[in-house]
Structure formats: structure tokens, C-alpha cells
Image (cartoon, rainbow, N blue to C red; front, top):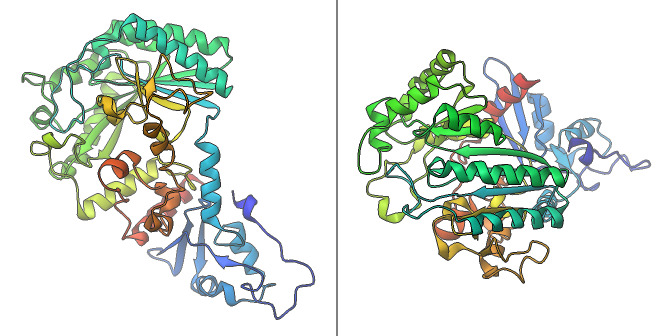
Length: 450
């Protein structure tokens, strides 16, 4: 993107013309930090993704960039990094959003073959207890995928298996995968899939089926070691789950990546190092590709469960966890926060209802249409409740929230989780008030990648 924003000084400019006269201005998305042990500063631009090291004198010149002579050579260096520019960055973000939130080259389906679950986690946002996806609904899912491929001319079809616990309906995962893989091949689209599973029901036979179904990664949650996990992720009706999950991961040959997730809460933030070490040892013992994946717990989406849910992380722990997540997924100028804000992504529940966000998978009131009737070529006219579709699409960067629009973190967070912004409250990044810590972490991360 830095090449897109590079500008050259117009020939014949007056020697007395200032950078401000020539429309240069400092980017609103620069963050700064003193580099420990050095007399230089890290400057990261959250819009272009660039990272530069400046002397104190250069930092001063950046701070007065608008007052410099328009022909000053350092302006071009600043421009190449996006630290100064001649255009409206917010308008660019809004235009980027409008283009990428439409039906793009990738189709993403979150499929819930069942919303039943064999666990009863106190922080879960779902209401469990329904049955399995019928054959009629499975046929509708395949028909919908074909309509989406036709409408978009996409070259990628990605499926996420979700629930409930999808392995309670593993035969549906196998059957639908075979049909969707065949469909993607007929349209010349690459097929890829992932799964969220608690791994309690994992066997070698089911694992082999998942591999044949093009599963490339699985996310399995371990919320601590032993009893600490069992208190947060018990069986429905009661009973431990940790030992069986770990034994499955250790004894089964798993030919795809396993993200071992820890939902970090206020009481478990201090155990992250222990769980990370456990995950690394489990990977060595099993020979499987298992990687530690901490995620900050932000609360339950089911209000009636809040009294039983663990407390969310706050303060400095939240800042550090937030920065860790940022580094893991960092990209500049995000067009939208998540795929719920894209027309090419839908979540399909076990009864064939379409919801934009998988956190609403068990809430029929959030459905905007059905897999049987919705046509992405005419998305609003075929939606049973168009407002439930458009409110997600319109929640992206071009938000009417003036606080978001003026915030320097907008290229990173893209307005935050739309589900929370629409139905609870806007969720700001936890490092919002500590840009120096974030700048230094990004500097170390980006320079190490070089």
C-alpha cells in the first residue's frame, strides 16, 4: 500500500511553499515508542502497516511536517512509509469496505450440523438441545453453496464446521463435505475447511474422515490443566473432560493443524505459560502439529449465564493479551472486522436458517433468510428479514459512530465486533490507551519478520 500513497513533489513548486500548502499532512494513524537501549524511536503506521526507526531529529521533523518546505527531501521518505500523505485515509478505508464487503472471490460457509452439545460450559453463548440437520436441509445447503459460487464467480470455498459439537453429527460432516468438495471442483474453486470441536469424541476413524473432508485445521479448547479445565468445560450432566481430550490428542495421528485454544479469564491469565508449555509438550509427545492459541475472554453472550461465567480479563493483563492477539493476526487497513460483514459469508444452523454471525447461530430471531430460498444474486428481495442482513453489512468501517471514525485504531479494529456493537456495546481494543506499548510490540514483531 505504501507504493499506492507515494507522491512526488510537483516541478516548479515555489521554494517558499510549505508542505501544508502542497496538501501534505501527517497521518492520523501513526503511533510512537522509544526503543529501549537506543536513542531512536519506532514509528508504526496502522494504515499502511509500515514500521520505521527515526532519530529524535527526524521525529521532530515529522511532528512539524506540515510546516516544512514542500521540497524538503524527508517528506518523500515519510510518504513512502505512509507517515505523511496527501489524501483522506478515512475515505480510503470506507471505499475499501464497500468493495470488500460485497460478494467477493471467496465464499465462506459456517455450517452447524447440530446445535446439541455434550459439554455444558458456563460461558457458552448458545442454547443447546436441538437435533441433527435433516437430509432436506443438507440438500438446501449444497444448493445455496452453488448459488453463491454462481453469483460470485469465487475461486475459493471455505467451510467451517461449528455447533454445538459438530462431531455429534460426524456422519453429516462427512456426507456434506463430499458433496461440497465435488461442487467446488465443478466450479474450479479451491476447497478448504476447518472445525471447532471439543475433541471429546475424537477417534482415529473420525480423524481420518476429517482429513478426507479437507479439514486443514481444528480448534480445540483447553481452559487450564486438569481440574481447572474441568470446572469450566464439564460434560453435560457433570463429569470431567480434560483427561479424555488430552489422551485423544496424544494417541491419535492427526494430519492437520490443531489450535489448542485457551479462553483466558481473570483467574487464568497467570496460567498461560503453563498451558503453553503443556501444549508444546503434547505436540512433541504426539508428533501432531499442535500450537497454543490464547484468546481473551470477553464475557458470555447469553445474559442468563453471566452469573456462572468467569470474570473477564482487565487492566494490564488485558492490554498484553490484546497485543498478543494483534500480533498473531496483524494486518493494516482492515476493511471489516469479521466475515459477518461480508455478503459472501453466512452461518447456516441445523434447521437451514441463515445468520450472519455464528454467535447468533442458536437465535432464530437473528435469521435473515433460509438456505432454501435465499439467492445471493438478489440478496435483499429473497431475504425473509432484510434488516437482519443489512445491519451487519452496514456495521463495517463506514460506521456512523463518530468516536470510531475519529479513532486512530480504526484501521486495526475496523469498528470492533459487529455482534457486540449491535446488541450489547462497542468493544474497543484493550490497548487503546497504551499506544506506546503497542507500537513497541509491533516494531519488534515487524522487524523480526524482516
